[in-house]
Amino acid sequence: MKKHWIAIDWGTTNFRAFLLQDQRVIAKIAHPCGLLSMTKETFATTLGAHLTPWLDEYGPLPIVMAGMVGSQQGWQEVPYVVAPAGAQRLAKRAMRIATPWESPAWITPGVSTVSQFGLPDVMRGEEVQLLGLNALHPETQRVVILPGTHSKHSHLSYGEITQFSTFMTGELFSVLSKHSLLGRVLPEQQNDKDSFINGVNTAQRGTPFSHLIFSARTRRLTGELAPQHIHSYLSGLLIGYELAAVDNENTLWVVGSPTLTARYQLAAQTLQIPLHAADGDTCFIHGMATLQTFLEETES
Image 1: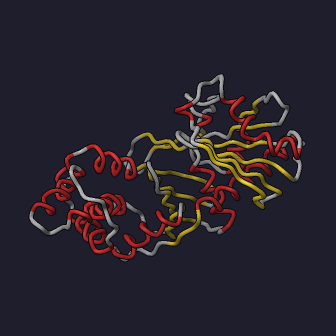
Image 2: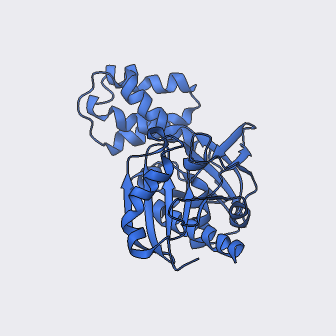
Image 3: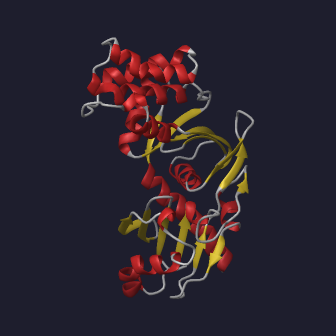
């Protein structure tokens, strides 16, 4: 591959592209054109339109894509790789895609597993961040939390993803705060550390989940919670409930945006769980660079 190349994170709601020289970001763009707004016929034209300035300057650069672009509803379905899965295996199963402007392009696969609770589980896109974290901070064994709409608790062994479990923490917060009784007729919300910590601690009591979350209403009615702090408390409940399932026998990391990682670190500190943080975008870039190296070897 050329020294310049393009890494793309194409998810359900958003599109992000990074122009790189080796592992250094030269430029980046973002658009709200995830696969929910696309059809299979529009992926190529949309990609070309977004990348035109870079292609005009550098020519048909290599493109490596990850995320929901490789799902059943994406540009081209790329089957999951069954865990354990490392960078070499994932690159080997990447799918070559033809582009109208003759850029060599690949869509990377996701990973499937059986969770720690014995249920089927999948990820697309998060595996790249895990590879990047391993490249930046090599370690024999670790557990990594990838917070977001669907938070992942992932086990890595010698750089391979061996197992993970998904927690719908972010989506539940959105649904409960916007579309349930818990979020109805609330004033403008304010972040409140004490209310968040209260939620984290309350979630450790083994309370049945549907009863636990109702406390976001009842504690407001009794005056224990200020109406403007309900979202902080509810966030604490959900993250605290999630962290109750964490395996902290190995080194524990959280990878994501600074805002989310700080929230998880506060919850972990409350529970006396050591938790290291890494930036999600930085891990994504290094993970894609690791995959790009293996793809380059397959092309040579």
